[in-house]
Image (tube, rainbow, N blue to C red; front, top):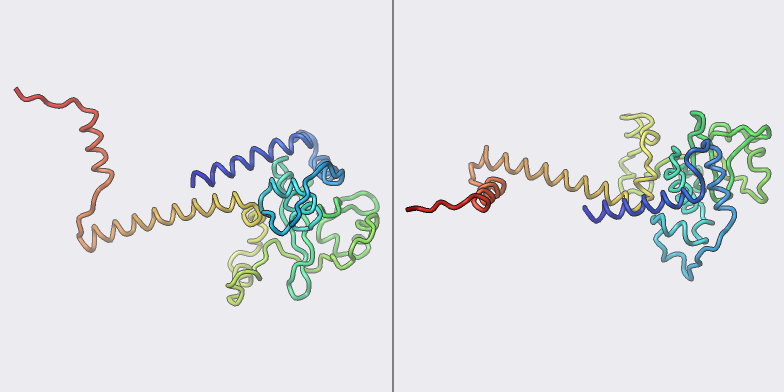
Length: 260
């Protein structure tokens, strides 16, 4: 657990320094977004991997280093999200889906003026209409506004529509047969928008922090339950580690009695 905490702290420290070199946190949110996209658009000197498939795509340092990953929608969006969070922006990942619920593209949503504005990091684009107004996913369901937002980008795929979308893909999980999305929507409507799931699912270091903390709490609770069962039901004498530790400490630090 200590290693996972140290790793996550190192990643956050790295991202804070990286984002500070790109843009100040004191400027308005839209300027921070534009600064990050400008950095991605400028194509500074970046490493090239002979085999990109071997790269750790959930490691923020890797996604910011290799230019192949900054040209793929999933990892480009991850890179944008990591830099945006370090710039104190509220962001989340948005998956655009085909009719059969397969992912066709990945974009980001940024909270600007209480509206979740769409940003496409792959094409270094923040969605605006002809008058320069920022557009949400609901706005982009209008074909006219979608055409205005993407018209300046050459060969932007017209199939990247916003008719079907999700923040979390449950189709990859083996529990898909249990209709988990339908159950979760019924139990807690809007559950996928309450939490920034992309931070948990797409940042490896943070995932392991949550995993180790959850496992630690689970085993502590299990230990307490087994201790109660042994004391109350089975009446089995247990080795009281804390009691023995206190006695050992008292014996070690107290002055010995010398009998005359």
